[in-house]
Image (tube, rainbow, N blue to C red):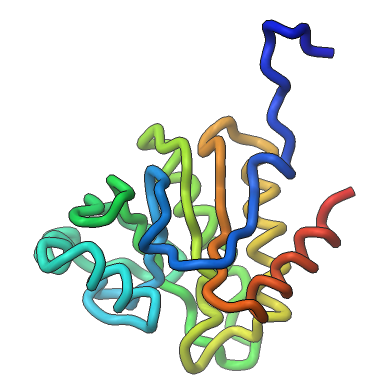
Length: 184
């Protein structure tokens, strides 16, 4: 048991939280951008991140180059409150027969590994791969995201805080249910 002078050891539940809102407004060390393999196009998250970060982000993304599905790349945050952006490419959903769920899990793991390698303490994720067509069904994507993040946090000190930012109430509720089911 920690003494009054020692902080409590973080647990999974206080290192992973859910929030309803706009990922571009998050005050964290890094936000995750779900993008295409060129880092130049994507769905609603990509558009919002690029709009909020400003035109310098697109220029930096050109220098970074391609990113295969499941991998991650890092850029500056430019005009965002977050100093860094972690870019990842979700798989295209073809019914679950082409390894899409493993690739999606790799998106989360590789962003977290990159954050850890850079000493990033706080990361905000959107619901990767579940917002554009063809989208991964949210009832599969949400529990996979929760499980993958919790497994990573269980083995690593960084990032210290991960927030899953849900853009709408339905997405938030499915992630909330998945988090409750994942915890002992």
